[in-house]
Image (cartoon, rainbow over the protein chains, first blue to last red):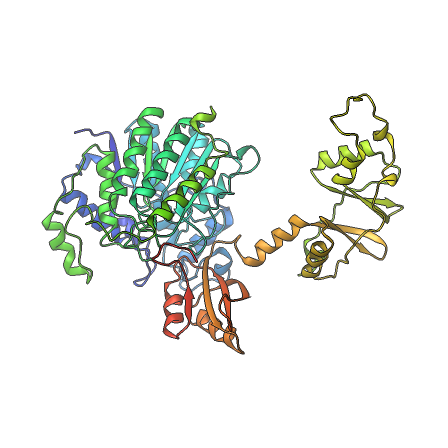
Length: 385
Length: 214
């Protein structure tokens, strides 16, 4: 069994907590960790605890006044008047006690993953608490306070001058990361997401390709609503392999949001658990082919915290740590511990039974193919080299 | 929104005596397509990239050493009847002018003095802002009867759900007697709003199981 991978994990991650009714709930990480352990995929030496990112590290991307405000707000009993202007105190990002510390811990977790990989401690590392790709320089958005992906990329640029390929398969567009590096030709941001016609944040159009010398280094594939596994994987496989071989990154950072699953309550994609085995598999292979194995993965969206997130991220870790899992019954201990805590019937197997086919599958597949072709037009693909 | 809010104030201009060659260089250097022609601050004409190209000999002709055209003044080819707008005009009126006259830009004139320019793409960028698609937001579309008070009823629901609206558009629906209201709302989780709307009997237009985006 290879021990070339690290999981950045601590139960303290659950302090990033908005309220009981909020869809973003890091309790999902407890379920995930327990499922990984139940499968026997975790040795003590696999785990690195997160640390808090320093203000200096956060300031690689974030505005100093914003950082100070988040800290002040987290230490204040009542909501400060400027909160709304920083995107805080909204339904999406309510204020909570010690929000700076909780959010900085997630960023520090991703930086620990970067350090582990770049300093040669491991080939790959996974921080499932990370992936908060909507946060902007001076503004919280879409459940995200600090953007650990952007900070990690800036950190990779600063300390290793690395060419970074960022691959975002969350169902929502990775807007915060895209805009942070929109004019940078050393950072290739790739986002495959449900079209923003209806879905938040509304951006991620094909036409967003980067700016100035970074033109061509932002790639977006907005998929039709109700896209299923085959079409998703077809697009992902072709896009990511061609771009990676064309761009030749030094390191790959994947955002592994798992809200493209059909059970996810916030989105309209129709994928199954299968994609969460295949997505990291290709990233893993490309990292070995092009980057001496350097691959950092983070979590992201995932709002069915019972039926989707634990299985999906267990699959990411199983791929990363070379401990492949096959379909079969989920560990009974896990089911026994968690089923009593939810009204939703938990899945009993690792993969899903096939879902009913979407009636207009052929059209959606065709449409996605056309979108893919157009998305690659100005991007650094293998053929263009 | 008024023209003065969106117009470009640093305008690249020429004089009547400016040569066609110089004007071409100005267009290329500034990546623009229209040059107002000023005589002592007074707007006397406009030349477009097309006027300039029309004045050049065809590239297929063989006399490539003939550059006499480049030394002629723009006054010879400029359009003297210039369609202009005023800084206090509404942008929709400016858009109408551009559309009706099939032109690409409008010099903005105040008391005989050129104070700005707006182009088609300035209007497009304002349109994008008006639609709210430049801010992170979700799209919620509601079909309502075309009668008094519907917008107010629907808006009330956004208030109840504590969701901030970044833009509202009302357009005639596909079905007779109906209007569609499109809201862009500042939330990643529009479920509460959508449920409230459905509960109150509104029909919400969204992606459908058929896999078609309506």
